[in-house]
Amino acid sequence: MRAPVTQFERPLDNGLVVLAEHHPQAHSTAFALYLPLGAQHDPTTRFGLSCVTQELLFKGAGDWDARALATQIDHIGFQEGHNCERELLTFSGTVLPQHLPQALRILRTALGQPHLPSAGLEEVRQLALHRLSALEDAPAQKMFYELGQRFFPPPLSNPSEGTPETLQALCLQDVQGCWERYGPRGAVLSVAGAFEPRALVAQVEALFGDWRGPATPSVTLGTQRSGREHLDQETEQTQIGVAYDSVPFAHPDYLKARMGVLALSGGMSSRLFVEVRQKRGLAYSVFATHVTTKRFGGVLGYAGTTTARAPETLEVLLAQLRRVAQGITPEEFDKAKTRLKTDYVVQGESTRARAAAMARERCYTGKLRTLEEAMRRVDALGLDEVNAYLKTAVPEHFTVMTLGRRPPEVP
Image (cartoon, rainbow, N blue to C red; front, side, top):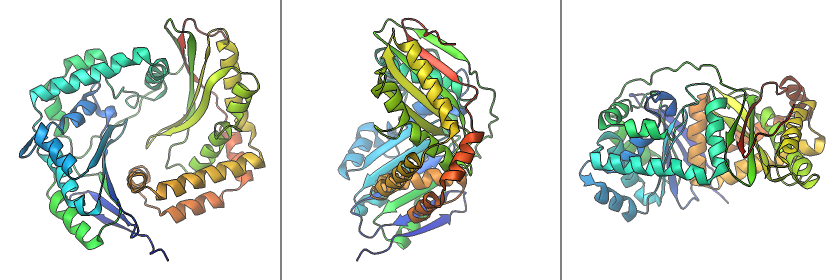
């Protein structure tokens, strides 16, 4: 008989919220720290600053230089990860349960006592420039990079990767100023897996209780650039990206919107696969996905095709995106429900995925749900209410980005 999973939330006096989900049968422990900072806070002349600063934290901290810090991470098998998003800076890790205290100590040291060396800055800068130059050999990624800057409202549209010009302009003073904005207010630390609850709380309070920092500055969203643009590139294929507004994660209709997208792109029987690829053979790859930040949501559609067939591909893609507002079928509804519930089951089997999901939900909604509560929300959805919502969510204003030899001409 499996022991029950238990969950609790503990706010610290400095504003850091600690979430924990105890899985007695787990063989690993994972954590995720989410800070309410990200690319949206980068100055327009310093795009990429948040990402560069985050990378530089691990180039030496406390009593460890860069090599010694890397040795500490490797010694305990610490599967460390970090990511710079539009609204968030995320830090994560997975370890054996007995190594959790040391892993948290390493993270706290990197956050609180980074060396921020000038040599490290140049190394991180060059890696960032290399990633940007690599986009020239990855047309689909380049298209999405450009689409994001036009679809998301500023400053969410800030390119987290930076631009060659803004990356070259970065200096240590910029990095220092960015790091000084780090703080616990509004931050969430979640832990999932095997641990002793009382010991965990004591460890976190001892390590993070003295953390101080300013409140995250508020950001006002501007107006999307939207419209339609083409990037000339001599390639054999044409990359097509289409985006339109939807609802964000915390919106009451979020799951209904996800249902519509899953009907479009939820496997080989989904509408886009059948209509664009299977019936017409227009694209070698086609899909749609729901994207969300805390305050903004959207749907991105993609198709990769040949130059000659790009106009027809774009026309059919737009038609299918519009048609979902007419509603989904009972069969599509059942498949979408199964897909959502499967995602939750898979999430529950990975301590790393579960820690990340808990932190993100708390950041986006201010709430913490168990997997069982999430499943019940899906079970409570009815086909009629999903279709009633979809009829009110007709895509009207598309942002279209294409990349290839010539722009596809579609009315």
